[in-house]
Image (cartoon, rainbow, N blue to C red; front, side):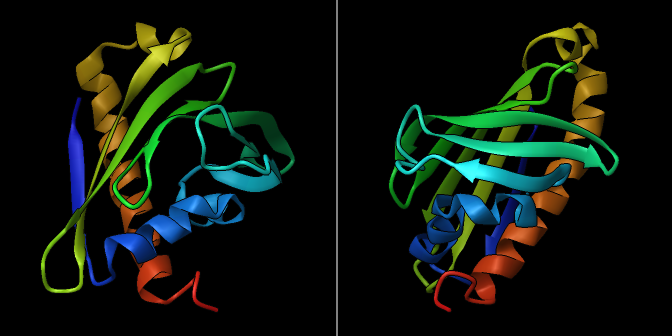
Length: 148
């Protein structure tokens, strides 16, 4: 799995606060067009964000589900976008000791037709998308999206 990473000028707690607000998901996840609902217990394991992917009017409704979480440090999701399939997404936050943090993101297809694409080709598409997602996440966290 290819890993993308980005240094963020915000604490791991501030970055995690953005991740923990399911209503901000479409603000940082490339491809997520809108949020339809967020389970009350997000981001606890089993909680889902009900989102749409694509561009209007060609939107597909699906969801992303928390697989594992360590508050302030890690979030693991199953992101669904059928008919393409599902992907497992790992986000890790590491304090840099200077008030900021390093965010690492890994993703790969886990089920469905997307898994039929050879992994090197999948990763060519996933890496730039996730690089942009981390840029958006950084902008939200550094801009204080959760402090307003």
